[in-house]
Image (spheres, rainbow, N blue to C red):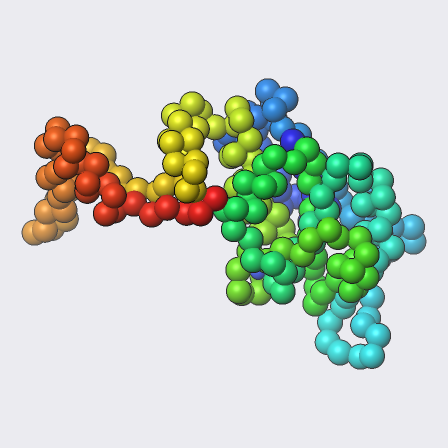
Length: 219
Ligand code: ADE
């Protein structure tokens, strides 16, 4: 799995991808992540990536030319090109699972008031939204999609996690309420307890409790 991210703020990704299990997966060669500065594909001195909207209106619009050149350089036959926009298809676990089986994702992070519509119409394979709210750009959506996809790529997570997810594969992914020590957490006069059933050793009862306190996320 390889991910190429096109952005005008490449530094935003530095610490995010240089920490955690994702860095380890990159070091092991399981996944490849490349962050590209869109301005690399500009030609004028000011490295312009945006311009005023035709027909008037507020703000600036990202230009098609640098994005077109960037995608042309990075795209292969098997690539899926994603454009992040708040009006895109709502991203979910099912899409994450589908993406995790692909070889190459190219993510275009929009900024400003929008991106020239021809990018959505002619260059991107899919427009994605991570939720019904408006962010200032596609950088955080790119991190959300990258993390949710990469954790499904075999070898990225430890064995335990993979086993947990495989057991519910037919329905989706299971997320449960969990507790660890201490059994009693004292908060002033209050005592916040771990549910007794989890300490009982009665596996049947524990299973029943878990069924009530877990959520299956369709995947
Ligand atoms: N860009 C701005 N807001 C966004 C959102 N909610 N999802 C994806 N891209 C965005």
